[in-house]
Amino acid sequence: MSWLPPDEDDDALDAWDDSAYRARPNPKANRPRTKRRPEHADAAIGRVITVDRGRYGVLVDEDGDHEREITCTRARELRKAAIVTGDEVDVVGDTSGDEGTLARIVRIRPRRTLLRRSADDTDAVERVVVANAEQLLIVVAAANPEPRARLVDRYLVAAYDAGIRPMLVVTKTDLADPAPFLANFDGLDLPVFTSAKGEAPIAELVEVLRDRGTVAVGHSGVGKSTLVNELVPGAGRATGVVNAVTGRGRHTSSSTVSLRLPDGGWIIDTPGVRSFGLGHVDPDNVIRGFSDLAEVAEECPRGCTHLADAPDCALDDAVEDGRLTPERVDSMRRLLGTLRPGVSRAE
Image (tube, rainbow, N blue to C red; front, top):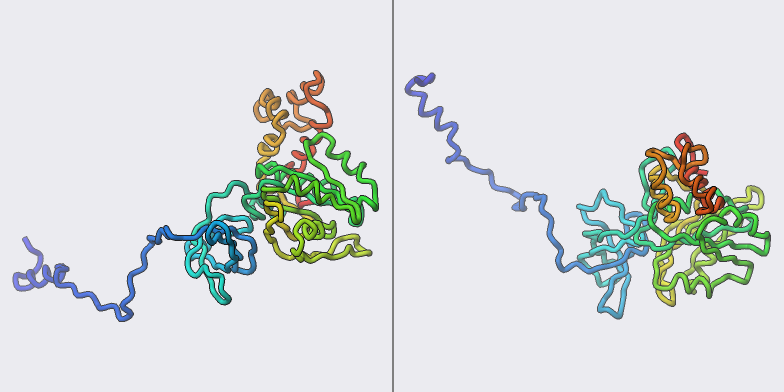
């Protein structure tokens, strides 16, 4: 039985009938917004070589033999994604590279490696430094400024975490003997190059850098950009001097830039840093960087920290029976020690 009076029943039903609904015409005649994005099957492939305040310098391959640098912005769908130097990307739009043109990055291709850092050891939020690097070139000075073994340790931890091969260059060896400093790394499989004034090991470095992507890192004032300028003539990376009062280098290179090496490969120059946080690093990745130690560590009790005070650590047994050297185990433990809980800042 209807609850409406007989004369109002039909009118009420008509009120719920949407067959007579009239949509108001769209005055702007634009299409409704959709979450479906175009596939951009015709996108060009490029490599990010510079990043500067929302603008990206991208090198695209024109026809297999010629490359051109274009300027890009990011597509709306990538507004929360970090685009960094070394990224391989898909770009659309005006890729002519003419003055005033602006293309658009629509996709970041899968990354092979990521070198990351955090603000400090208590911050688990990672900051991507570069993408797709195969090698990490750590540059320190034998003096002026004084070398810091703990900072190098942090670079090594970041390299092992990223699956990147680390190397060490010690500059200014004409000012001090680097041997005492290098003794800190006797137990590591770490290639070392030394450089004195006017005697940079360019030929040796060219061989190990050829056809690879290498990122150069180091404290301000150690001569990193000077070395890059010698490896890439005409690079024009800014260089500076060390403050005579504080003993610290002045920040000269303010941006990360990827440069093609004359004999093949890439060198990525980064701004000088005085700290390198490791809040994002998984200690297990550090152990994996020491394949011989990782194999022995599988014999450890569950939850073993592999540090010197860890009970029943299999690494100690391996040292006692001669399977491992004390220096190599101590080196790995020193690196793990940088990730101890409770460390309040990057050294």
